Image (cartoon, rainbow, N blue to C red; front, side, top):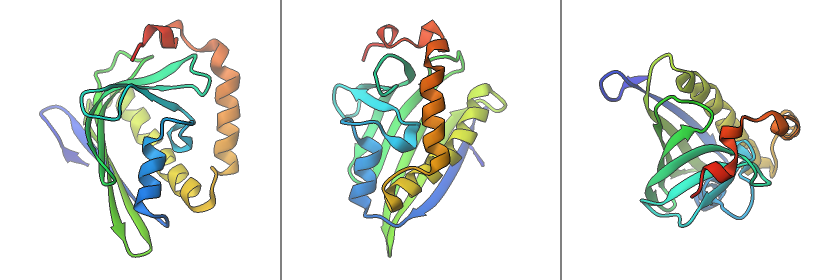
Amino acid sequence: MAEATAGTVQKVFKIMIRADIHDVWREITRRDAPIKCFFNSRMDTGDLAAGSRMAMRTPDGKYTGVVGEILEVQPPRRFAHTFQFTRLDDPPCKVVYELTPVEGGTEFIMRIEDLVPGSVMDKQMSQGAKLIMGTLKHVMETGRPSMGVRMLFVLFKMLQPIMPKRCLSERWPV
């Protein structure tokens, strides 16, 4: 963990994935289906370009868990956006994905910047990043998430009726 800006921290997660860089890029930027490694959320954005608003929504589109602005798109090597949980009042952070082709696959790095130390966002992003990294590796190498992650998707769907009203997608237009 290294200092980012005054009063915030940066966290870095790295993994080697046995898959082509273009396939990994396509998975993390897809808009035509839920992204399994991002908690089975659908990316909703007008355009995959810097300056575009984005939202990560439930597969049925009813709820929005995350909103942000795309900051950088450099296929297939770098994708960056701001990140704000819709159910929290914590300030947004920045997420940067860096992909590098290496022998046997792709090195995948996720950087989370501008986290307020000890905030709810800080804790949830650290836990979530580990699950994202492992799920992305599993999806890319086997074609689907692990059984445990698939069970989480079922649980998420069952919990939708008790999601806060502030997370309804109609409140978060893109």
